[in-house]
Length: 355
Image (cartoon, rainbow, N blue to C red; front, side):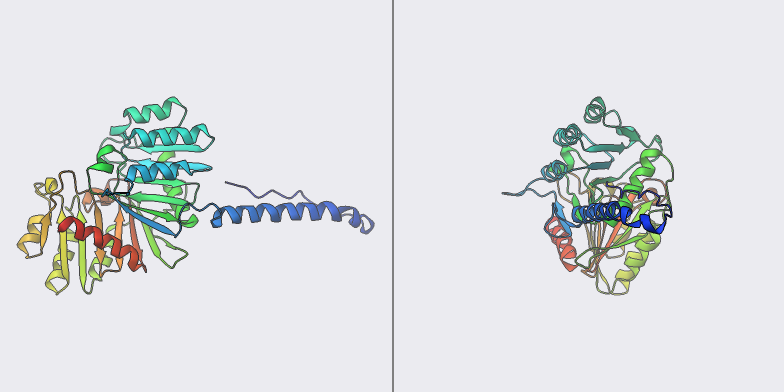
């Protein structure tokens, strides 16, 4: 981004020399103000790619509705200065093309990915043109993020892996957020992964307030305590809990939801059918407790990791509801409050895939 100029040291001078310094001093001051205004203008939305502080997308494709792949390609095309991408999996040719095109026009592009996926053809193409790609170097855990930060201002995150299936076969969600403070938080997480080192204080538990009043708390596992804030939100439910879970094996979270159900809270959920054979799945425990849970019937994967509480609070991100997500994998978890419109969008997706 831009850096403020450093003013030259001004030495004490005789009284009669002050008029000679006045003109250059004013010029330096005006230059600093102009640069400052330029930075403020850039960061405040002069070239905003969103009409609001956020946008929510789902993978359902209809007449005139672009795919997640097409939406992301358009966002990358708008990048001006920098793209930092933490992607578990990249095999989408159009997205690789968009990253390469951004690199060729002078945008700084960097990527970190999962060790198991570093040999993908699309990633090789990025490396061939000089885009630096790092991996987590640990085959025993996942670099499971699916986020991209554009121009240190826009954050793209959710459940969507940048693959053909992720865009066109699986149920996925993305939230695209216009917030410099939130972007800074994600950039810090990216840098720690890219450099394989801690570069600052833990970036989780960071509360951001958007221009429309939306409040977003961000947590990153495994370095942050993710289960405590998640349990706190579930246990605070007064009327309803709706969840969409690709993988739900966390006993403590399952017990908290069943306790809410027994206390009279309307708890409903949908599980990915390919995951419930896992002996740790919470599906049977929920079913046996009388909780109205169902299996997804989509031919692809029901890949959401979403909880909506009281029709007001949305929990989303890359974070599956599992012990591995809490203690081993690199994940992001967003808790979104004070925005019923966002909650209604996710509830609409719940109703669509459960009807």
